[in-house]
Figure: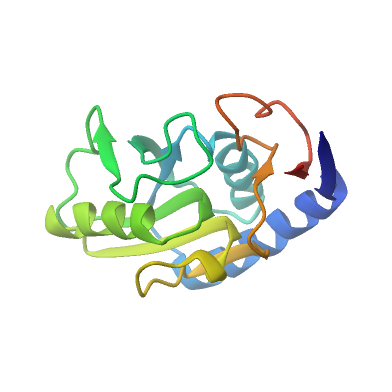
Amino acid sequence: MVSKLFDETEIARRVEELAREIAVAVAGDFAIVGLLTGSFVFVADLIRVLDRAGLAPRIEFMKLSSYGHGKESSGAPRLIGGAPEDVAGRRFLLVDDIVDTGRTLDYAKSLLAGKGAARVWTCALVDKPSRRKIDFAADFVGFTVDDVFIVGYGIDYAENYRHLPYIGIID
């Protein structure tokens, strides 16, 4: 069973607010790198709002995994496929669905920085600070939640529930 936590209207409002924050802080030429698969719905909505704010970021994706089909992270993010090319000297906004332990966004940020990125900002739709395993704080955060397992709006449990238009708690 899934109990609704944030409905479509709340999510849309918060994505608009985040886009305004990002437009001020990250203005200019940059690329968004969405971390697949959980961020795809969030990235799609975010880039449309950024367009309305006059920004036209290049869009790229990286696939990382640390969950598999369970509710617990393995603690070791791994890159599946390739990373963006031509990273040196470019500015990036990494976008993920959830910052939980902090390891995935930290890993992706370090990967881009190690390839010579000029600047890397991080953005997460949902933050679970109580689950942090490393010292990491995203630059932009949509919602902060307690230690609950959420699904919907692209976020899955064992590849299910991504289709939900809201974010809910799995009971």
